[in-house]
Image (tube, rainbow, N blue to C red; front, side, top):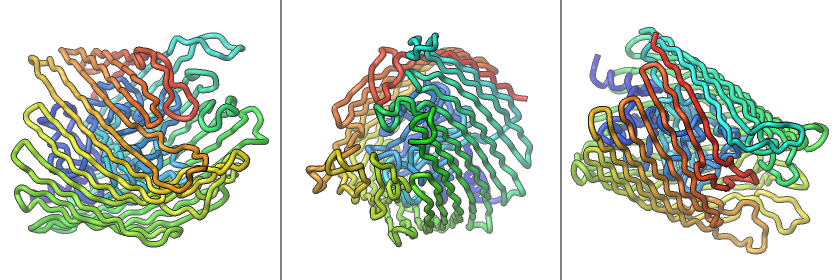
Length: 622
């Protein structure tokens, strides 16, 4: 088998076997960043990419994907409760629907609202790494990757195993309900296993979580199940399938319509599935077709004890197909792709609507010139509501020497309004606007990085201009809020990061990870006398520092965040984990919000006070 064939088969697997910590800078450069056409080594990428590896996920004081992402520079996770009950994600000041989330390159489209993008049924144990791409990503992934993308890469099965994870936590605060006694708490159990055979590999995980909340009517119950396989037909062809289901029920006090929603409730069911394959047609051509489907059932009950009024029920379907190709040439690599997606909603207060999207990708990447790396491409998109549009982009890197690199990028991206933005009829509170234009962004960025041994430093600047920025507004309190193209959202930003791993002795190390981001956003518009519902609530300052210490079987990490939003609302949150790990089991204790900060991330939901969790993991190879 040729070297190119081996490289393709290795890179095309939707998981990756490297397990080195992000803090180990000598190993992170070996990670292959997974795009849908190119597979690019981390140290050869010209974009602003961060990676959370499997070791990072195990160290951090978190039990969900939502929680680990809040320790990533530039990422704004705005939660409404513990256990990731309902959370929004933004990158570098982008809103919750301007960031695209993917699983192994499969896009998780949420055309209803964007609020359910993080309904992901995958436990941390099944994840190999999380790739965070900051900046416009339409050229790589298509529409709605306006300000960035998050790609969750699952593990590659290498042996038979059985896994169990038990955890329970509490704030020690007494419940507020007059007819109940006790304290607020949360519990969870995860079970799973893997099966390995030379020709096929399988993994299956299930979990159940229950919490009575962190305040009145914020309790939750959710169940998740996730299955994935990899079928090897021969050395040139293989098939992968995945399917996941999540059922989440939670009290929604203050989530959307405070203060009148004190007794509201929401039930959300999400199902997703995908089947893809990889084929080597000849020495230079590679092909990757994929079909995926996502279904979401969102039942919001403004009065949970009276379903005759104030109820919103939405059924959303998204079916898409992709065909990606890759061709090697002497002077570089050519990537081509085509995708088609059909989106449909049946809703009690949005109505029945559907739309179609057709996109074409083309990219050319070259490392032919020893000092230069460049990637030039464009995404051509047709939407049945918004006609044809083109989104070009260019990334360039110059390798000064073995340690220093300078990178620059310029790119465009698009967000199609959600069905909620367009058609919501929730009088007298909110109404949609079918005349909305799509949001289009142009971003320019320049950065530099230095890597030597166990030290890595990165810093840069970007400027982004979002045209036709969408927000909800009204002229007076006598009329409902309506979605409108408010104007241009312009953002200047700087970012910096320092990683250092100090090896004290054998089986004893100290790791430092510090980052700081600054955003200066503004909206240029002519609606000076209007009441804006959201405005700009993005992070202005974000400083994150993690220090981890490993000795023998013991691990200790402290993770600290200081955040200030554009509204001048600032808070400092400090979390910690101490863990004891043997070959088959791990016992850990987490304390979140150690200093009991009082803060709100979104809506009118005060976040939990000091919260302690005790957990036990058991993983045995069979």
